[in-house]
Image (cartoon, rainbow, N blue to C red; front, side, top):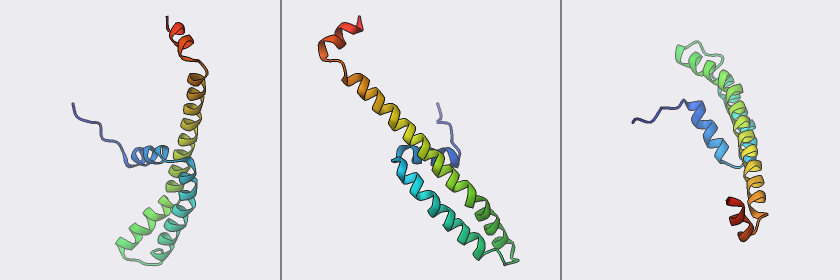
Length: 102
């Protein structure tokens, strides 16, 4: 069976969710400033390719940081969930854990 192809946004969300939460938070302003610079540097041109680059960069100026921050939120929530599961599993000793299975 073939693997379902994800979109670029799904892939980026999965990447930022797998990284520590602070990486997504730190990358959001970098992405905003980078795409903002790209949009303004090609903004005054009338060539079709430059207009396309400026338009895509103008949209990515807000979209890329949003994806970074949503991925950071997913990472923080996943980390909190894993910490809770570890605390719950670590509370029982071996004998009581086995006795609790039946």
